[in-house]
Structure formats: C-alpha cells, structure tokens
View 1 (cartoon, rainbow, N blue to C red):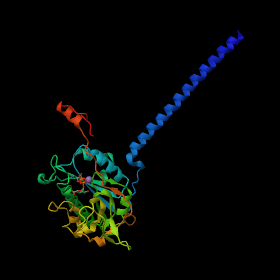
View 2: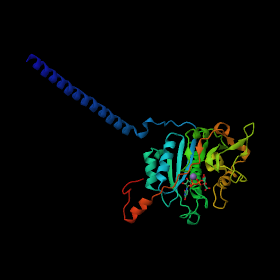
View 3: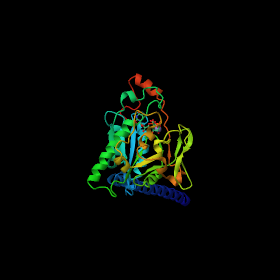
Length: 323
Ligand code: UGA
Ligand code: MN
C-alpha cells in the first residue's frame, strides 16, 4: 500500500514538473517575441536604414540610369538601389524611357530610402529610334534620350549650386553612366571618387565585347596607351559605358558633349568622350586597371507563356501586385 502511494506521488510530482516547465517555457518565449516586436518598432522609428552608412565622404557621384518598363524592371532597379544605399556619396539620377515618371520607380526609391538623394526624370525615346517587338537590341542605340536629359539636369543643378556657393571644393563631383542591368561592386565607387578635377577615369569591365574583360592597356609609367578591345577596336574610345566616369567640371566647360542618334553602332562612348579627353589623359583606376569591379551582365527576358494564356481569359497572376 505504502509503495502504491509513493508511486502515485512520483507520478504527481512528474506531472507537476512538466506543467511548471511548460508554464515557464511559454513565459520565456512570449518574452522573446515581445522583444522582437520592440525591435521592429525601433527599426520603424529610425527608418529602415538605421544600420546603413549615411556618412557621406568624398565628392558626389551622379549615377545616371536610363530605365524602361518591362517585366524585370523592378528586379533590376531593386538590385541597383541596394548597391546605391551602401554608398552615401552617390546621387541617383534615374531617367525613365516614358512620357511621365511611374509609381513603380517612385516606390523603388521610397522603399530603398533614396528619396533624398535621387531625382526621378522621364524622357521618351522618339518612336523612330525605339526598338520594336522582335528587333535585335543592337539595331538602335539605347539610353541616348535619357542620358542627354540627365546631363542637362546635372549641368543645371551644378550651375545652380555653384552660383549658390554650395560645393566644396567648387564644382568637384563626378558623373557615371550606370545602366540598370549591369553588376556593380560598391568598391567601384571608391575608385570613381579618386578621379581628379578635369579628368576622365577608366577601368576594366568584365564580360563585354566578346571578352572576359575589356580593359585599358597601360605603359610602364601607368599611362593609358589604348584598349584591348576585340569588337570594333578602331573606335576612338573602344570601351563600354560602364568603364569610365567624368569629372563634372568637364561637362560644364563643354556644353556640346552629349550622346547622339547620328553615330554608328558602338560609338556612343566615343561620341561623348571625344569632347572631353584624349586616351593618354585618361586616369587609370582599379589598381592600375588590374581589377574588375563592374560586369556587363544582361538579364534574360523571362518566358511568360502561362501568364499570356491567363491574360486571354482576362486574369493575371499579379492582380493587384507590383512585381
Ligand atoms: C550596351 C552598352 O553597355 C550601353 O551602355 C549602350 O547604351 C548600348 O550598348 C548601346 O550601344 O546603345 P546593352 O546591354 O546592349 O548596352 O544595352 P541595354 O542594357 O539594353 O540598354 C542600356 C540602357 O538603356 C539600360 O539602362 C536600359 O534600361 C536603357 N534602355 C534600353 C532604355 O532606356 N530604353 C530602351 O528602349 C532600351
Ligand atoms: Mn545592358
């Protein structure tokens, strides 16, 4: 009998122990989620960027991005915006190939916290210069209208801030043409910041012109002699748009420097650069042009056959959603 009571007591104690354990466990995990909620509130109060660098050092780099509506546009711009968030000296000049600016692009700027260091412009490519349906993309130049609109905005903006005595040292800032589909390392912007007033900086670009890398060729003293390009090497400046940036004082002293529809395929870079520099005067960057910090990647056009079939029945997978 005694033995039986002892056994029951043991069971009771074991049961109590389990109940107590469960009670304390539930308390502690509630404490945990409470903490998370608190953290989320703090993050909201400080803005999403509380943990990001926001201390601007060095000259402003105006990054000019032409962009156009297509299924991958938001993905491309989100990728780009997250690089730009990490580099506080970049001011983003985004120019949409459209009649007017879009809420999709406004939303990208808002969500990435870049509203205060960006401008959202639009400039539609004239119909006769716009690629149509199945045109191969090399048929017509891309980004001409948009980059020229950006240059106009930058020139006016610089003149205004120079007249207001805002820049220190007067006028030193840089302009980089940053297409929306390439891949950029944040380190590239440290290199761009080294460009001296009056200079155009150059560096290698990965995966372009049929080569693993297209790069400036330097002599022993580090002077740019030319480029290793395989595609149209006879061009005055046989390099990609992603491979150079310009000291903006050159743009102010040379108002005619811009892009053009009148030039042969592959000559846009040469078209603007011929006004600004000669090859030997270009400033080599990225460890004597030995490092690749930008890649001319291109995004595959997604196959949306099932979506098109849905649309025929007046439905869509992204109803009410921005993709
Ligand atoms: C290559 C160069 O890397 C470009 O800098 C150059 O403008 C282009 O060739 C050219 O020769 O015109 P690629 O990759 O072939 O670039 O061109 P995309 O990336 O398709 O277009 C360049 C930029 O223009 C992108 O930022 C893109 O969003 C924009 N774009 C393209 C428009 O604004 N509208 C369009 O209809 C097409
Ligand atoms: Mn591209």
